[in-house]
Image 1: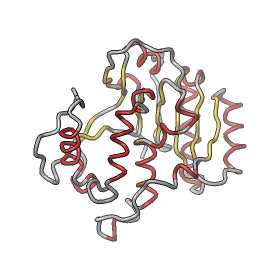
Image 2 (image 1 turned 180 degrees about the vertical axis):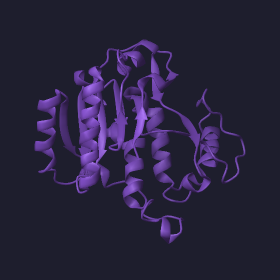
Image 3 (image 1 turned 90 degrees about the horizontal axis):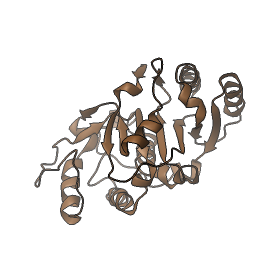
Image 4 (image 1 turned 30 degrees about the vertical axis):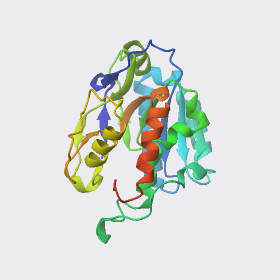
Length: 253
């Protein structure tokens, strides 16, 4: 299913620090073994280049797991044709760690929410900020491989907009996930906030005694822009480590 996102729809969460220069990149996580999703990604990147002039000013990094002998020449050809600054990056070592292998979901659900899906969630949640390719950036824009981003004529550069607004996070929408998709997440967040009282969240305040299946808000993440320094800061890293430490007991996907 195509998802059409416009940068005009972006919401922002703000920082109180001065704006930074925009050293940014667009990033995707590709399954190079799946020809259908690879073809969709290449089509969507061509659309990005055709409709979003700002995209040609930044690196577009295609993260992948395993050999990419067939992908790299296609990315090179697409880059030559569209002037996108495309490059592939194997993240097999980083992608293979930290994701719990068990689940409380019924067996019929495992194909959708198995170990690969868990690793993908963990990668975008925190692992991506551990990569040398990302650590020195100011902003990172994530696109799913099946996301088609079309910009309106004279659309503004979203990275420059983030910097001007001193924003932490750019997003399309906020929804509520099914309780079984993030079991105990709200209760975990409330307990963590009680242990780390300096955490202040102007967007969402966890209830003090959240029930097990109380749903937390979910950012629609097939399109998002992240302030790298904020997500790589010790406070955010400590929270990510706390989530990792739960295994499949306190936070389940």
